[in-house]
Image 1: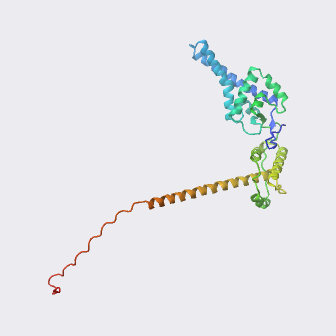
Image 2: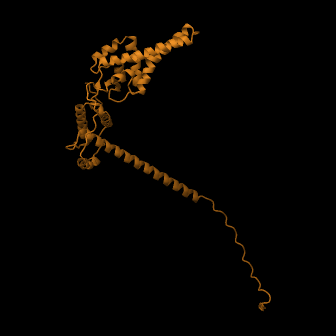
Image 3: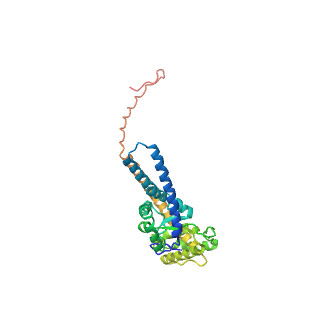
Length: 305
């Protein structure tokens, strides 16, 4: 078993694949690729009978590059490190820190693999895999990758889950979690914790307990608070990670609320300015008072002389 170590000296405990399983996976992949290459070449030769020799050579080179370099790179990138042969044998390509591979890693592995496996008949790959303690070939060395086993032979197959925590104990440590100072915990350690909790179901029970204890000790050294007595280290890691996510969510919600308030205040100020600068319509002159109406005739009233 080979343990992967991150930049923070955190052991990930992934099992490196050895030469026999890797060789069989490569043989399966090459069988499928060469079969597709030959079938496509024969089909095009029947359809394009009018091509001259130079065009046929160009098409053959293009198909060779596609089936033996481009197609494996695309499959490995899209499947996060699993080709057909690796999937059949329970293998996966990961970065040296345990993370998923990207396009640049798969491209380097594909280009170097074409030279060492196909052009040089696999001799450099075999020699490098035998010398390397992790079974790496030259493509893995240049790309910074590693082929690991996802399914351990002879294992029970039962997925390991986080151990249950007593509710009273969890309530008792809730105050400590809220008061923890997580500012001194570096991001690589958080990444290692997330990777471990995400892959705990793929690890042996003893290895998972050993790794969780080591990660919990590293976390306690950064926060200054040891793991509470009676709490499984893996459960404590999950609780602390949840507390960090809760704080990040609270900060994000507070920032969104402040942004909404600032937008409302800016809108209210804009409306007030528009109302202050709005032109006042001119007032219409009032009509003169109407003259007194004379009394009706026949009332017996005469105005004074």
